Length: 426
Ligand SMILES: [Mg+2]
Figure (cartoon, rainbow, N blue to C red):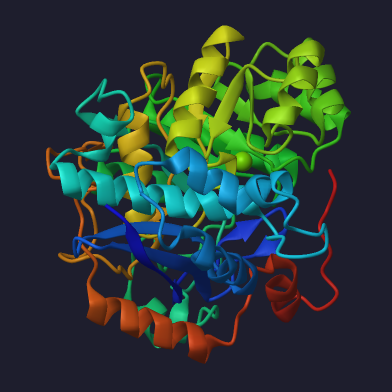
């Protein structure tokens, strides 16, 4: 089997006005949909980061991928990373470099696994060592948010659709009561059994109160997490960490950097998790040496693909770390890729993050992937078990061209709402 084409299509989909430590989500989130076509007429699907840079990388990767055997992923990775060309001394250092070869390869790798699965009649999980579980647990991902549902209806509370809707998508949640209501909606709608709150937005004492309020509302058996995205000082992290350590299953990136995290880890009981201070293989020795974390949030989009994620989880076991999974705003192709790799990781010790309930648009046939009882099912269908809806892809691509966004910038969006706003360090 040979790859005869690589197609990368940028898309935009409605995203509600969710708050983060960096500002505010724009009315549209961006992704890139990848299709790898074989000489046997099969197409494999992938999905990765959105906007101009990932698109340029994938377009640069096309000539390196076309003509290759999709089973020979090591060679494809070497070609995209530039190792092959460097070894052959064909490439001068300033030529042909991708902004992020690891991310570009990850997107191509997922599409190749989908292709291989379709060619062999096996689900992707079975190509990654085999499934350990039939369904994968995901966590509710709560956000402080403004009223509104995003997309053409924008951010404002005055938008018609937002006024007419009374659910977690439309409703404002800027205090502990709002978060408790959002938590209830997520549990009732999707059956989630674990809950994560994106923090680093309001005064840390208010965020701690939101965690305590959820504990009171949901009882002692629902694991809770808080992720302030590294904007708390060491002192604040220790103080708040101690205040709510009885309520949390883990505290995610309370402060910045591996040294800061290690200092906090020494002073609190609650386990620390990260998707920020350890984001590359070369970060791991120092993370181990310092004792910065107890849990690593994997992400196949960032770490170099599905097989890399299986290997990373093995490494976590070596160091006695728990394993969870990080998420950005994404569509169903990414959700199924996450589910297949998570199914093949025996030591997935925590439910995976996902932004998926915040998205209403979809590019796959049949619409959104169901989340039931907090789980996504990994079926026996070949590949990722999904097919592209070409009409939906064309619509979301049109939306990308129309919305004018070319990268994610939460700061600019926040400043539209509050001129002069800057990220706060607590
Ligand atoms: Mg995080």
